[in-house]
Amino acid sequence: MTTGQIKVWDPLVRIFHWTLVTAFFIAYFTEDDLMWLHEPAGYVVLGLVVFRVVWGFVGPRYARFSDFVRGPAVVVQYLKTFFKRDAPRFIGHNPAGGMMVVILLVMLALTALTGIQADEAREGQQASNAIKVIPSAHADDDHKAGEQGEHEDEFWEEAHEVTANLTLILIILHISAVFAHMIIHGENLVRAMLIGEKEE
View 1 (cartoon, one colour):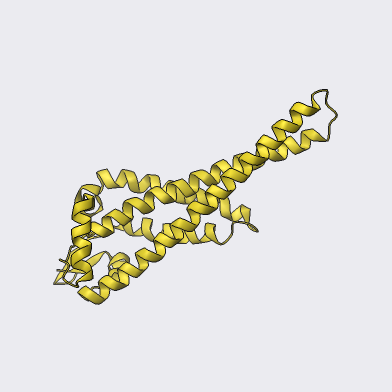
View 2 (cartoon, helix red, strand yellow):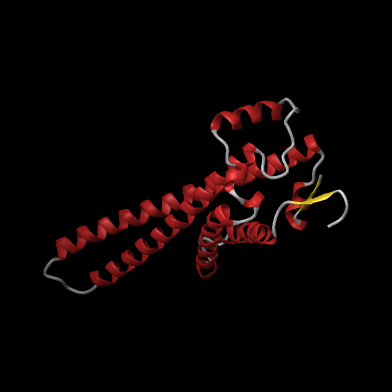
């Protein structure tokens, strides 16, 4: 570590961050045509979220939720000063950044979980369609079950798409805030997340 630098992001946080970015965008852009790639990427996202939640309690100082999760009033006050270009500098996440971390973790988990549910509903619908080709004494019941399965499939597919798109919007906001922070404080947050250090 060079003089005038302070260690902020530990290696696991940095690996988590860039792996999550990669996995999310692989999953987002391979949904329809490359399910063999989409599904594993989604499971990687979910696994990373679980890791980050655990690391938020047992990791080093700046990785812990206790260091950057603040109440709504503190976040609002910080944003007021931020837009006035008078926001205080934080070594770790600032209050708004901390709030974004929590929201993103929740939305990423919801995106992955709705994807799993959509996949299970789709497989159930495919099994139901296969049964339909076999004559049955309970054709009406089979038809109703098939319709119910189709509605469930559509519900989870739509929920998965909505959560994925909302997550993408949040990521765009996050990136915008990073560049705004760089302008206000002259601090390269991308570099900090790559090498783990900030200027004191």
